[in-house]
Amino acid sequence: MTVSSATSAAASAASSSSSSSSTSASMGMSSTDFLNLLVSELQNQDPLNATSTTDFINQLTSYANFTEQQSTNASMTSLASSFSSLVTLNSVNYIGHTVEAKTNTAELTNGSATFGYSLTSATSNVAIAIQDSAGNTVWSGKGTGTAGSNTFTWNGQTTNGTQLSNGGKYTIQVTATDSAGNSLLSYTTMTGTVTGIDASGSTPSLLVNGVPVSAANIIGVTS
Image 1 (tube, rainbow, N blue to C red):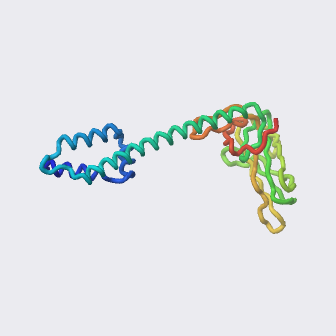
Image 2 (cartoon, helix red, strand yellow; image 1 turned 90 degrees about the vertical axis):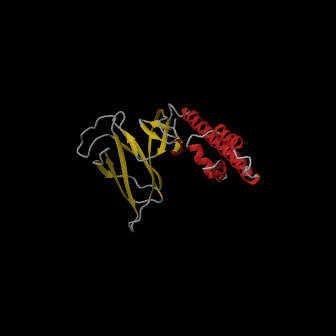
Image 3 (tube, rainbow, N blue to C red; image 1 turned 120 degrees about the vertical axis):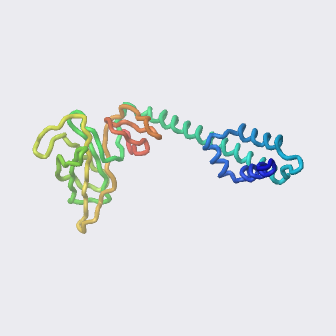
């Protein structure tokens, strides 16, 4: 391959859009590497068939797009890190407080677990089932059917009266229907004390009686 053909090929590759620049960034090329490539082209081009002004301008434009993409990526990474830190900082304020959060899972603590559920209208047809982590129903019975918020505190006992050990995570299943069989359940909740923060994921979660809960799902602080 002649020097002029190599230069032309390099110019064609460098004149791609910002999407190509993004690909180069993902392959580990830095802006310095990109600039060094342009300088090397100028130093080694065939003087009898030099890179055209248009091709050179295209390469410079590609370089500008490349550095802009790198700057944007760095800014987004910094912003995401700052946001995560802010969420963690705000979440610390919940530690030690009793909160109500939208979720259907609670940990059995001190022999009980407090759940809640919201109904769109009043009904007498409310059935509650408590399931263990394996999906087995350990307790079932009736619940209140007031329009709006309802509370159910489970005593940690199975339907036959066996007391279960603390520490297990249990899920509430609420079936509430009107006379036509239409569901009236809006959402379920659990109430517990925030004991810490789980920062292992991309967004920190509150540990409410040992259960990870997003701060966005907190709907009330009672103490």
